[in-house]
Amino acid sequence: MKPLHLKTFLSDEGFGHIVRQRAIIEALRQHVPELSILLQTGKHIDAAGRLIKGIETTRKYNNITWHKQPNGSPDVDLIKIEYAQYLKRSEDFVEQEMQEWGDFDFVISDFVYEAFPLAKKRGVPSFGVAHFTWDWFFSKLYPPPLKTEVIYRFFEMAKMADALYFPPFTPEEILRYYKVNAMEVPLILRSEINHKDSGSHDKFKIMIMDSGAGVLRPSILKALDSVREMDDVQFFVSSSMEREQENISFIDKNELMVDYINEMDLVIGRAGFNTISECIGLRTPMLLIGEAMNPEMNENILNLKKVGLGTFISLETFENDLRHYLPLFRKHEYKFIAQNMKDHEMAVNGAEVIALDILNRIG
Image 1 (cartoon, rainbow, N blue to C red):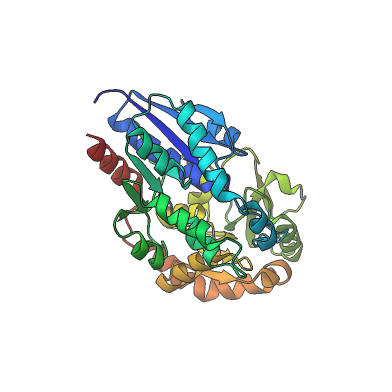
Image 2: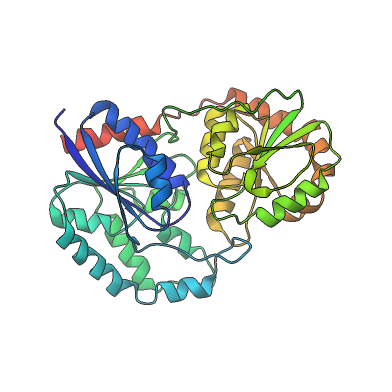
């Protein structure tokens, strides 16, 4: 196939979208070896450049973010301020991108709305990839932080995309609203997972994962204190935790913790979509910690519990009573989840499905 030039826009939130974007780029490269890529994002540009090899990057705030309180829940007041002047900012963003446009053949966004009208103005196809949309996310907060006209502007722009790809567990409301250009795809996983060896341990192995922003760090440290006397379990945490404890092993903070999921008997962490996808793909049971007022996390937990592939632990129990909770959980609910993980038939080739659909659409 002829060489192609892609520009991809990433929002300034989390690392899961970087991993998904990497999977899609890997799949595209299987069919278009001469694919050149310019990736644009803001605060996580270094991580994106490190995780996705052979791309050019440009550091720029892509006009979409949200603000969190120390406990990880949305800070509605700051979000309201952030989007008070959004409509003008959105127009200015598209205008500036028009002036800086290169010779791109198509655009992928995950999930920067302005990418879609920009591509339409430049006469090239555009594609969105997300497991939730920001219009859905912000509309679930109370009091609503965004003006109605901003939400409608989101809708308008997203409907300009040639296709929006949504993996399993995307909220039904989103699929219904974007039914004209929505396409449901399998889970999006990396094609080549670099499975790491956690060492030889005869114990039950549990990995406790924090967010990229370190939201759970204080809670994880409390939980590790509570399980200090558990000698039948080996806990794996980031080396950034700096905790000396016999039943703790460290994973270097510069490594991807998801590379170790295949080695674990259980993963405990936030209900982020990337963690969920990796665990399902590698058939590793999950114990998920919710966040107050975070609609994405709550939706993920409800969906996983409904299909029996994970369950929920309250933050209070995780912090203060993990040593009593875990033995009972392992004896009862864990066995049910582990069996469901072993038996599930969920497809995990979403990146390949997306790549082929994009290449078919752009001819």
